[in-house]
Structure formats: structure tokens, C-alpha cells
Length: 203
Ligand SMILES: *[C@@H]1O[C@H](CO)[C@@H](O)[C@H](O)[C@H]1NC(C)=O
Ligand SMILES: *[C@@H]1O[C@H](CO)[C@@H](O)[C@H](O)[C@H]1NC(C)=O
Ligand SMILES: *[C@@H]1O[C@H](CO)[C@@H](O)[C@H](O)[C@H]1NC(C)=O
Ligand SMILES: *[C@@H]1O[C@H](CO)[C@@H](O)[C@H](O)[C@H]1NC(C)=O
Image (tube, rainbow, N blue to C red; front, side):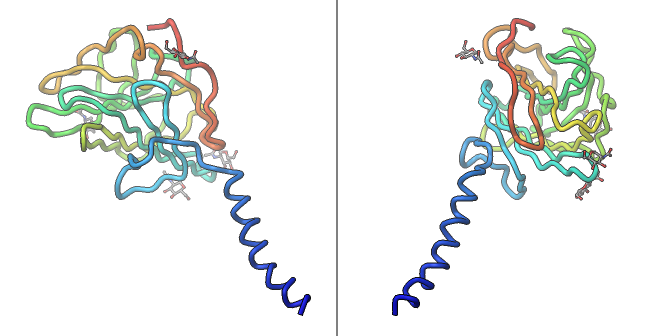
């Protein structure tokens, strides 16, 4: 009788151990309820400014990451997300910019920000983009879908993100104070850790 009682506990213990193991490795937090519909990503992180979240799945076998960047914005405005593989901050970053034209068609462009007054030429980045990017505008937020080969096959990358005004497809300059100059952070695509203060005096 005592023996049977003891063994009956084993499955429960196993379940509790499993639950403890899962609780020990929670995914990085992102705002609940905003996960891009119809797509799934292994990890996500709420970024400290501009209300933005980044979702991703890292593939160690080929060094690529599938990424969704989501941020609230007015329909006439634009949002951007990218990687600076040279240093950090805006200049030198390869970015994806989502915006829409007067008819509401959402497009993503890829461009290297060569200065603080970038030309925004739609072209190739300083790293491979093996799948064409996509963007959508739903519920007051843009989502950019991008697949990138992480530069130098390093899981730690210097991220930048941004938001600004626009009209009928034109991308206007962003604010150069407050949250708009705090939008950079290093991200480890493997561990999900973010590294470094996001506040910076660099425009
Ligand atoms: C990278 O590897 C993943 C997982 O094996 C695969 O799904 C994806 O298509 C690969 N991407 C490229 C660009 O080869
Ligand atoms: C990237 O690095 C991973 C692990 O460090 C390695 O397994 C993989 O072969 C590398 N991929 C490329 C494309 O260099
Ligand atoms: C950028 O170029 C790509 C590929 O040529 C195209 O699909 C995309 O619509 C362009 N984006 C913009 C905003 O023009
Ligand atoms: C960044 O600045 C904001 C507002 O100025 C502040 O609340 C926040 O603590 C700062 N973060 C860091 C990492 O310094």
C-alpha cells in the first residue's frame, strides 16, 4: 500500500520538474498580444523605446535569423530596423524601412545609412538578405519581416531602430531628441540578451 502510494507520486514529480525546467528558461518578454499573426518566432524582446518589439528565430546551421520588427506608428509615418555591422548607431547601418504611399500600399526598402542625411537609395545592405523583406501595416503598427545572414556569422549584433513622419511615400527626417536618439542596443540572437544602455547622445 505504501509502495503504491509512493510510485503514484512519480509522474507528478516528473511533471513538476518539467514545469520547473520551463520556468527556469522563460523567453525574453515582449508585449503580450502583439505577436505577428500567422507567423511564429522562437524569441522576442520588447525594446526600451519607441514602443517597439523584435521577434526572431536564429538558425545556427546557416547563421541566418528570421526577424519581425513591430512598432506603432501613424499611417503616414515610417518605421525602420537594422543592424550596424561596422560600429553602432545610425551611420553605417543597413536598415529596412517600412512606409506606405498615399494609396495605402506598404513597401519595405533596404538601404545603408551613409550619413546623418542618408540618400535612402533602395539597394543591397552590407550583409546578405537571402529572402526579400516584407512589411505590413495593421492596427496602427508596422511590422517588417526580414531574413538576414548575421554579419560575420556573429550572434551578437548592434541593432538600431527608428520612427519618423512622412507623407504620400516620402520619408521625413526623424526627431533628434528623446527616444529617437536612444534607439540602439546590442542583441544576442542566440541567448536573447540585450546588452548596453540604449541612451546615447549621438543623433
Ligand atoms: C537556414 O536554415 C533554416 C533551418 O534549417 C532554414 O529553414 C532556412 O531556410 C535556411 N535559410 C537559408 C537562407 O538558407
Ligand atoms: C556560423 O556559425 C555556426 C556556429 O558557430 C556554424 O555552425 C556555422 O557553420 C556557421 N555558418 C556559416 C555560414 O559560416
Ligand atoms: C525596393 O526594391 C525591391 C526590390 O527591387 C522592391 O521589391 C521594393 O518594393 C522596393 N521598395 C521601395 C520602397 O521602393
Ligand atoms: C534612458 O533615458 C530614459 C529617459 O531619459 C530613462 O528613463 C532611462 O532610465 C534611461 N536608460 C538608461 C539605460 O540609461
